[in-house]
Image 1 (tube, one colour):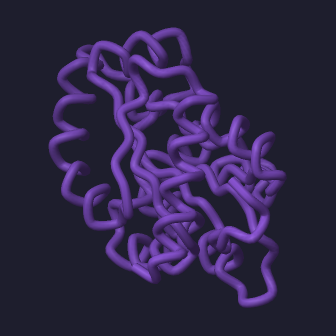
Image 2 (cartoon, one colour):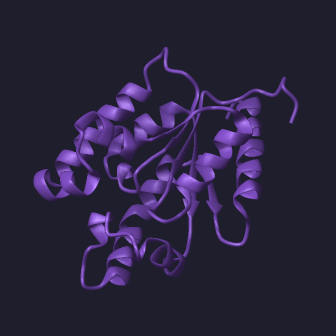
Length: 183
């Protein structure tokens, strides 16, 4: 990794909740020196309201509109380079997928259902998983979103079996190759 290698404007992490976007994002921030921004945290900062409360009081459609507005802000021509960790459902809107692709190098982080349930099971701030059968909900949502993640992503990365540093280093190498080859 030499300093003359081309770097993307941003590295954008997409994937289902519990797939490692925050963990890998922090590792990329450390390795690359770009600040990490989380779209859910930006929404909470702007609205002064937790994501779970937005879902409960205003609904998912309203929340998706907020996500789209955040993506537009992040895509501003004068915006600095960043690592962007997105909410798991941000890809459900076609225009969001287009904006995500414009932002930079898009990495789809994946994990098996059992791992997702293990990582998210104790967190009550996951409004879409507050159901009688979280496994069924995760499987259904993954099946629905898989083609959307694939449409937005430049690369797919399985997050099980490697540590965060190994994953982050692989992502950086892939991003440099991607931008060096002009693809």
